[in-house]
Image 1: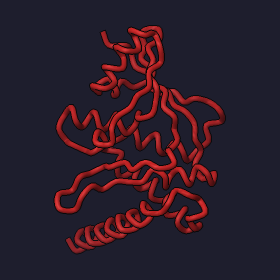
Image 2: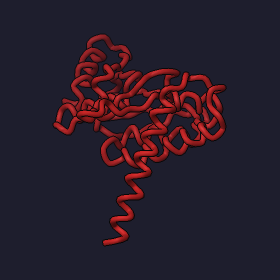
Image 3: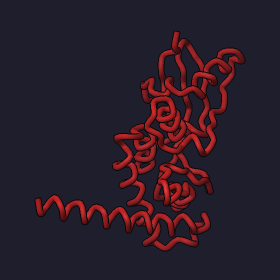
Length: 197
């Protein structure tokens, strides 16, 4: 029981320090010269920790983020998974892609990112985090979502709304800094699913 208590205390302290540091780093301008080597190492480690912690709730965005840690070698990675077909926005975009026979841009508002554990809202936030800024097309009875694995220079991603505290999130420009410094490797992934009947 004593070890379990210490485990909770240490984890609680680690989470509080991490959130405090994340808040401080979120305030910096997205300019690599504004970040020391230690700051960049913090962001690098933060990305790993966030991916591992978020994996049970957001496995696809965790997987995409972890792709930044290895090179793409100029190749598009392909993943066969139909999880994204549960998104209302994706279903609407599929219809538009079929009607126009074109690749259509995917987008969600920042409010769609916020975690809600209700069915449809959860799936919308899960897909929004993984696919925002990507493109969708229908080809040979398959739905293909082409997603750039890269972060924008400045965009706040709200993740969890905490009553009395506010919205916890991450400034994606922190990860953009690591891209500019060559610590992360950008590329592209295609998520492929059968066209719903």
